[in-house]
Length: 513
Image (cartoon, rainbow, N blue to C red; front, side):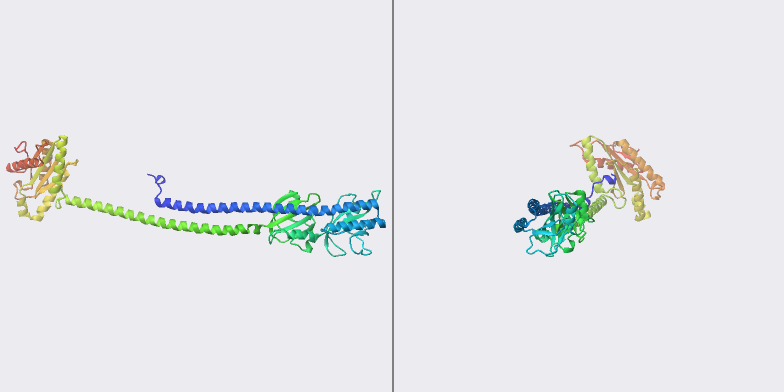
């Protein structure tokens, strides 16, 4: 059978099984770990989105409250004017609104020149003009009556960083009359941002749509008012806003974070909530290392047990192979011993024991099959004299040569047997052979021995010759016995010897042939 179609060995199948188990354990653990990682990132994506939503709502509500107060102030100034009584009433209103809105640092009204008209400060700073502020310049040059979120400013009276929310005040003819301003304390926003759970490396930020950072956690005063136009966060918001999510490496501190950004509902700002990717995955990494370590240990145990099993299988295979070799050797030895037990040591022919067993077996077979069984008994003429003249060693060599020739001339059919019957007598058993056939075989053997011209001075003619007796019968159950075949062939042999030797005689026809 070609090698590619051979059945895999048990060792190969065991190695394959152990390898598949180990690889499957590692693959399943890797798949579970990656799935857990994906789930963790999705959950944190939802968390940052919720944070951004809360921040946007808080900022929108904070600015909305301040803007609502400004709407009332603008309406009063435009309707009541700026006379002493009106200003007194306006200051009381502004003070009341300031007390209600904790996010406000102050409320202010400026005339068309940038001078204070009214404010909520306990004392008015003389000669203080804000005409140079960004929000004042914006309203003076724009007729838009909506709210304006200005860039963060540092208060000239308190030194605080503030977010200005302002509205334009007009004269009756629509010309510029001044600015109503509400300033939101950045610390108010930071108190809310500091209450958010964003980890050690998380960040939150409030940015205008023009790219100005209003405030950020982690907080430093240097970041307030900083441009965000060249940052990846602003580019992501500009391309994917008003709501989105992205992994961004911060331009502020180089930390990679999962950022969720969202625009405020009513004002041109957006917020971003960001959680550190490393912190998001820290728990996952810890769990992964623990259960991966357990899986690796389990794989090592499986591999070790598999290795031990394979070694045991190899040992068993080698032992079985050795047992098979030992069995084969024993069988070969038994065959050899059996052959030796059934073989004559001098001539190499079957011995008397094998002859007797074969005769009984073939006699029974011939009886069952009603077939003929023939026997040739051969005797070396005057072999005793040969030994006396040439010695027993020469006699043994002569007998070996004769037996070798007889073995070569004996048919090789099943049941045919040439055996040393005793001394210099040889028996040839021929199943399915009649008298004539057996006589023909005997004559062939006799002539072959004569043609060897083995010198024998004690024999007529000067060479070694044979005499043979032949008999054949079809055994009948209850009437014939194997000994009868032997006796008849022996009788024919006696007749051959009595008739002058070097001849073949048959029991059914006792005259020399």
